[in-house]
Length: 389
Image 1: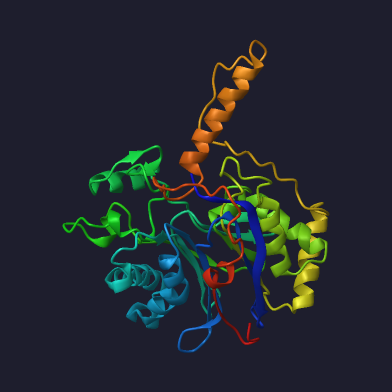
Image 2 (image 1 turned 30 degrees about the vertical axis):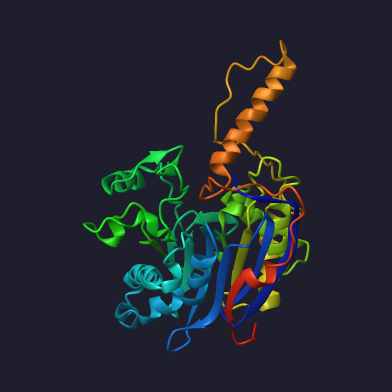
């Protein structure tokens, strides 16, 4: 089970910015976890000509090192690829992910570091193309005319393609985890799963090789949402899109909406250490399509009101959804026994599902930890924009 505090750290680390093409808001929150292992990047000007934009979320596990490195440097590895200069952005992203991973592995500080991180990135080029590169189970959606469209696919060990690669590389899947440990099947770092010297990087038990989805921006496209699984475990793609629409109707700015979304997903208690107890990071990117900021907000408000989204959708949190099946519990015959069985099953579920990487030696703190001691130091936001944010 993931380690949790006795009280969540709810301080938000938020930024915002924009230019004539995009607006963005971003926020990160430590939550119930004992440390902040997420990182993210928000760059309005990327590349030699500064005409591309880049946004990414990195959900760390087993430590902060991999996510911190990715947040600071992954985009540089992508634009350094010769294929980037040639306009082959899809292959540049794929090569850049692997090059960054290889560089991290050679870093002396990683010799005894078992950390890893997901990476979901969005490169938007000057011709209006979106390239979403993804390794892991963080996620990106685009809202188009009020409808959420997935631009990434979660990489889970139980997926057929992932399962075949894992087992072909010498690994196994147990409890839905790689070698009974890792709850996702692609990541930067996690080098303990990348030691088969007879196989290339993209065929290792766990690989940093990303899937890349291209999307051409149209007049119907409204905004992107990029977030870690601390959000997606609590809300569906469409619920997230509707939440953003509804908050715009309420007059909220993008960074405030990110904050509100994390508050909505935060668990009220951490006894089970499951859904709503993870670190959370959200980026919302407005696609202006020639509109001014005020015109864009008015347009989205009109779309939301037309769809009847005048308040935030109610999100049902199910801390045991899709984890373990409870059968033959006859609560009417023995309600106390039934309640105990449910509790045990949910605890078992949380133990297997609530954290990306199991820590066998972990002991959940019983006393208050210094809640915000490392919040500022460990939340990494790489931001470059014309507005200076």
